[in-house]
Image: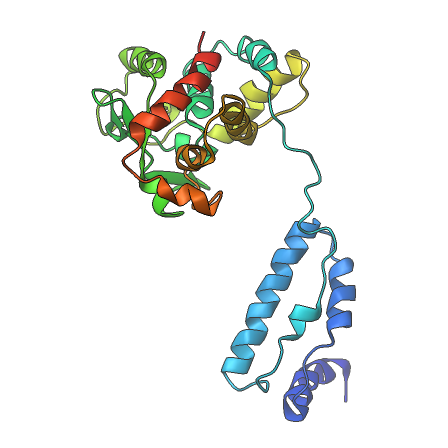
Length: 278
């Protein structure tokens, strides 16, 4: 039997004998894959689903999934510590960003604590400037627009501090794309059909500004980490932090806070905004 036929026959023989791949062999193979440990963990997860399907389809006998015995060391370990800016570091950093709307977009990201793909996808219709609220309704990932459906908490209104309202309205008055249906950060290069590319903003504005401020390279997610840290420093109750961060959970006691606490959230959100906008 030639090598190609042996490769085909091997899984057939395994099915006949009711055998699956040896976990240690899979573990050894994963070690040799030239990818990050987290990526290897994702590969393991896909393989696990393949075995689950194989058992459901009768290709293998129903038994313990062999991938449960496979370990990917360091997959869940954070290689870099979370980057959190101090108040003074933020002032140095944002002082190096003067271009618009990049500066306003970065400030908005910190003042709302939202994810990069969410602040990127904001439209003017998402804001209720009279009530002082914003609702995150969509994300942009890989250049494609998706509804924001991470969890029920993601659909709640977020408070807008007056300082941030003024900043956003100032940008709206200057932007040629200021209709309700327009993107807040509409790109003139696409005639407003899509917003500016936020990876490019990180590359061309955030990293140069943070480097010039002596902070090294930081990214969009550092702003979300910073927002959470500043909320904590302001003494914000954990449940209110949960709502402002739009997490499904921070602690079980956080569940007493619901959608009707925008005024409570506003109080603590304003403390962060006043640090960000001076």
